Length: 113
Length: 113
Image (cartoon, rainbow over all chains, first blue to last red; front, side, top):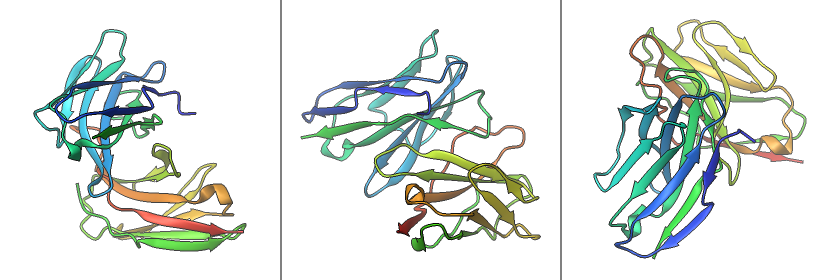
């Protein structure tokens, strides 16, 4: 158990809908990262937050957004969902924004039908 | 971040050592070498990291070539639980690092009883 929690574990929704994925980092970790894992693209970095502020952006679509709240939990919002958004979404946390170790949660499996 | 090359798959016997190679001929002087692994149906898990010297921890050892153009992750006694995809990742961890990881395809390790 990494100490990072993600909810929900599974999510099934229809095209065009909007969903919110939630992540609670390990206690004391200030940085949260979001990654997407699909069969064709592998594991891809989406976005990073550090202590409530956006720190780095990867290949995140404009339809996706994220935020980190004062209690350090983070939410990833996915809107206007398409079939290709079906993937595993992982959240990771680290002590600070440049820590060597990132601790990954169990992931949320999103299926868009 | 520089690119790494790993074999797609490797097989090992239980309780034997495993040497997982990684080539990174374009590594820069400030790139650290990180290894993560992903067990089936789980998020990635930190294994080890290093810069120039060989490193040991409770999970594995990391042997880094003198010219740093290649490295080897060593599992001293493979167990069935070590069956996973192993990712070798380079990241510039000096000043200005953004912290995110860029995953390649990794090496899928199978362990036979």
